[in-house]
Length: 284
Image (cartoon, rainbow, N blue to C red; front, top):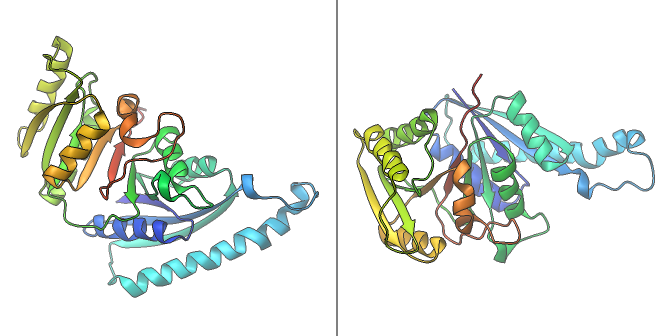
């Protein structure tokens, strides 16, 4: 059974992510946790001390949030056929956003966070793009980010950009393998370099590991030359009709051009393609 966290600010953008998640995990047994966080950054209650304001916080933020969460549950019931494999729970919190996400990931043993993201050109009062970027970089939990215009469709092509400079945890590769099996999808492993050059011995070793691991899956390696990683990915995604981009969290320094502006953490990848950022699991 998977535990899925669905942060929501009650926008259409976050609703789109919820819809995507329900379709994405349609054939899997899941607990879905709908979470709304009233960020402490925006909470100001006169000049009264915070401790004395507990009841006011409850009345102003928590109670309305619970009402809105019930509306989301009703919307799900109206738009989706009953699924005996899916259970839904609502959570409301007033805290710093990332701290609240971390707490829920730990307490509910969350396997994956699914949340919407807006590009930098469409930010509203609540900067969803910034929140998503913070979750990806600051919360050690696999995250599926859904652009606001993304519509769910069966996965047939998954892109996996890599520079072959790092080895990957077997559990992480198993997650990709599971995706390929569950959706009967093909994997496109992409290496991008600014100039044409051969792989070094370490890169060749890591490439061979991927070849061996995915030997029973439809996998193709692509070698692209482009000064811009973002441009290379953009062209590849469009030319291949890619349905999902998969990346490993520890490679984010290399692929920050795909996800973020160079100076501020806002999602800037302007496509309708979701991206999955995988975190390696903690070893006990």
